[in-house]
Picture 1 (cartoon, rainbow, N blue to C red):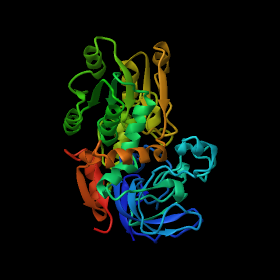
Picture 2 (picture 1 turned 180 degrees about the horizontal axis):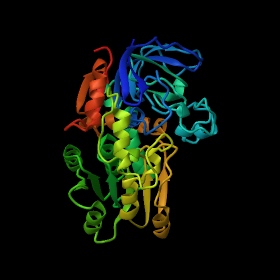
Picture 3 (picture 1 turned 90 degrees about the vertical axis):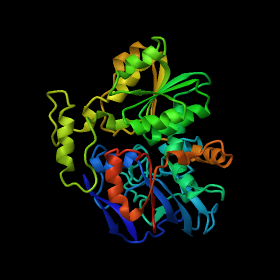
Picture 4 (picture 1 turned 60 degrees about the vertical axis):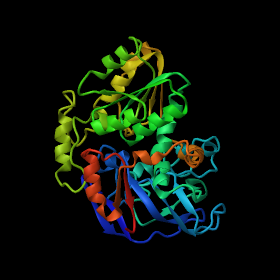
Amino acid sequence: MKAIVYRGIGDIRIEDVPEPQLQDPEDAIVRLTATAICGTDLHMVRGTVPGMRPGTILGHEGAGVVEDLGEDVRNFDIGDRVVICPTIACGVCSYCRYGYFSQCDRANPNGPLAGSAYFGGPESSGAFHGLQAERARIPFAHTTMVKLPDEVSDDQAILLSDIFPTGYFGAVLADIKPGRTVAIFGCGPVGQFAIAGAKLVDAGRIIAVDTVESRLDMARAQGAETVNFNEEQPVEAIRRLTGGIGVDRVIDAVGVDAVRAHSGPAAGDGAAREIFQAELQELVPQPHPVGDNWHPGDAPSQALEWAVDAVAKGGRVAIIGVYPQTARRFPIGLAMDKNLTVKAGNCNHRKYIPLLIEKVVSGEVDPTKVLTQLEPLTSGVDAYRAFDTRQSRWMKVELQPGI
């Protein structure tokens, strides 16, 4: 079968790989009818999230049809349409039972203290083969999959897999109450759904910060007020728009990319590592040269610094953008001085996907407004390149296996 495979930093390829097989009684095999490229996938390709094992199939977003089931998967039938949760969860441990599916004690083969297990990630996450393929093995399928009603299309389902629940999770994490003012840093796909999530919980005012005009256009179309950080200082703009007080809540939907000077090459460019390190050198405070022992986590996150500065005293900062475990820098002094609450984490997808499916079926939300490209899986390398370089109107890319 065809799949998009990681071979090294800046090196991904379309390859023929072996068909997945059932390995445990709680496994399922799913034929993917839709997968997608996420900003998190770019972290793997760029090396900003370290520890990727060469030969790993990329991707953590998927929807498809069940083709085979282990004997202990008893809530699905062969032929069911399903959406796949990016974070793998057993459904049995105490964390899963309390809804903290991304912190499952059993899913990560590195042990209960290793953190989230997810598809298409580094060795620290379990090195599970991902979903940018024609078929995939789904561990703990009784929990990691959610059945799709006929009313939900594949285009809608692929957005329900990760970025819609993650954006909604950001609004929940930020504790947005009706009438509160929120700023969202980053208007990429997750940022757009953070805006949608903030609207679903009745935020009074939403200010969206980015510099890509097509993303700012989409944010405005959702009703957000926009700030282009290359045209004005965003913290000053937010304070001016809020009478000098700042916003009640901030969501960081950018993550580790906020340490980059500008977009660099990713897929299919053998010089990606060298060019990327040259970009990072511009951001690293001396005396921390970019080298084999240096990591982007050593550089300050501009988004986090702006977030802590822009939020009002006593406010809350929610972090849903991905940072590697090696990230070290945070403006803790200013956060403490302002009596801020800071919450961060990976989305508990299995908790929110059923709720959001209902909102799609009811017509309350149409997630496909964020979907801008449909490409065959076999064009995935070129799609990665276009998405990574933020080509105009490339917001969210769905890849279609078998086409």
